[in-house]
Length: 244
Picture 1: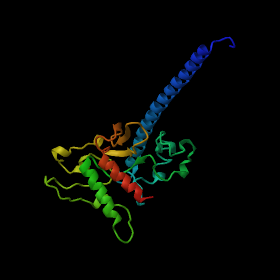
Picture 2: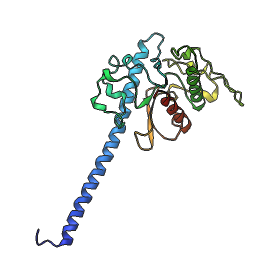
Picture 3: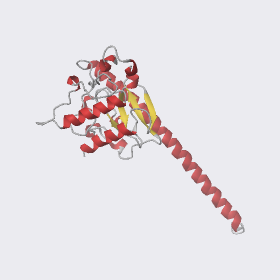
Picture 4: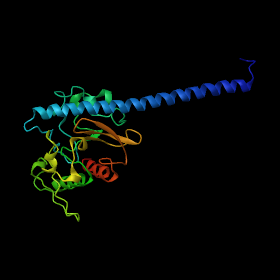
């Protein structure tokens, strides 16, 4: 090597450096793809766990929303370990704020990576109605109690004379349970349109996963279609802040 010209040495070093950088880029891309696939798989398994829970619950209901301000989650022990034996599935593997593989299920008290609304919403209008209902619930004097979706028919003024939005607790029935019978043509939502778990944006480049009631998962660009609109996600972040 002592007789190797300096230029040749530089070329060799540069080639090695480029090789290392390219290898790291390949590893990073593989890691990103693996995180996306794992998040998708975890959400589908959680969807099955919710279906099993609803199938055995009184009235075919999904878990109630946790009775804590700004905690859009459910009581974890209702699902883990009876319906979901691996608690790491409750979190996105790309969520850097969580030491994912060191968690014991008994230490998990809430969702960190996803929002669980506990009620059926299907578009921007019903999402706004949900947010308004939650904020109105916070104003109730004498303790909050459970947020009772069953007794709510949210009436809001609208120039289009649209029918009132019915905000109801998640239930394993036909989507007309949420919309009335028969549903208006422009509100023909199905389980494939009603989000069950909404991932907090920022874990995956360009978008976030949404688990829908029918069990399918979509990686939706952010900002994008409901529930990944800027307005709705901002409103959910505001509710998060109430629990800090």
